[in-house]
Length: 338
Ligand SMILES: Cc1cc2nc3c(=O)[nH]c(=O)nc-3n(C[C@H](O)[C@H](O)[C@H](O)COP(=O)(O)OP(=O)(O)OC[C@H]3O[C@@H](n4cnc5c(N)ncnc54)[C@H](O)[C@@H]3O)c2cc1C
Image (tube, rainbow, N blue to C red; front, side, top):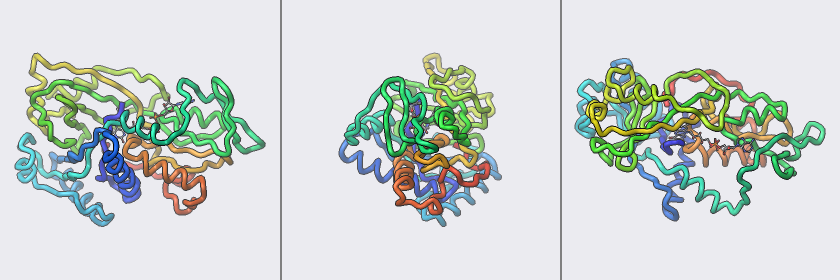
């Protein structure tokens, strides 16, 4: 489902560090197993003066967090490097070392290397309690006793936590991926290209592209199978749309006009926390921890996040040193667009 992209261009130092750890691991893993990793970069482009100002401010902040390889480009510089960009792009920020990988290959490789046993098709149905302490889970097959139980159920994490009487601050929001298998217009070496003002974005994939849009959307109940809506595809492809891909890259107008255009859609859910950062570590219920709430960044956050969750359980990471502990005070975050 996920498009498997990763970036360090975040709006806060904690996520830069968390994802940096993941990417170092992905790079190392790619040396031994092909997880389809490419560092083709993330290119955020702004069409308005206000957007351009915000991009410049963000790059300055990122430099303070040690992220020194983000390039801030004028519109002309950006068009010189990426000739397919529209004439009215005001500025762009680009980091070559951002990129993407194949999430399925990554998951299978991690599963193989872990040596752990996986029971597929088995669902957790409840918790085994010893007083107020969780001691394991009941499942659709046999119960499992455990010293600690960690909830990592993605969009279903909220309902699973409720089985232990725990309310997690999670909201699930439908997110689509538009897959276009065959697109001669898309340069195979292009970066992830994002309109800063709308969040609409695309990247090359195979001989075509993946395109996404993550505008504010209402929360819906958590689902295993998420239905798609064709309106999503038209919103990105129809040049008259207020978040059309053609706004920043005119060749998308040719794609729209082409009689050969074929596409399909997939949908999943982002699991958002109020501050759009994950919940990692022990909860107020003894014996119960969480590793969830990645807010759309769970592939790139997976390694750094899981390491922190485990360290928080074992005591290597103290609660006061864990900015992503589940019971932290949270402020709604407005800035990050993806
Ligand atoms: C369209 C789209 C594009 C995305 N693109 C990106 C991207 O480019 N980069 C990125 O970093 N992230 C991306 N994401 C987000 C990413 O997919 C998630 O953050 C990530 O998959 C979360 O991983 P997870 O292991 O926490 O949850 P999941 O991958 O959802 O896995 C949870 C698992 O728990 C299981 N489960 C649920 N309930 C139970 C139960 N009761 N008992 C047993 N098992 C249960 C589920 O079946 C599932 O297998 C995207 C998401 C979407 C929807």
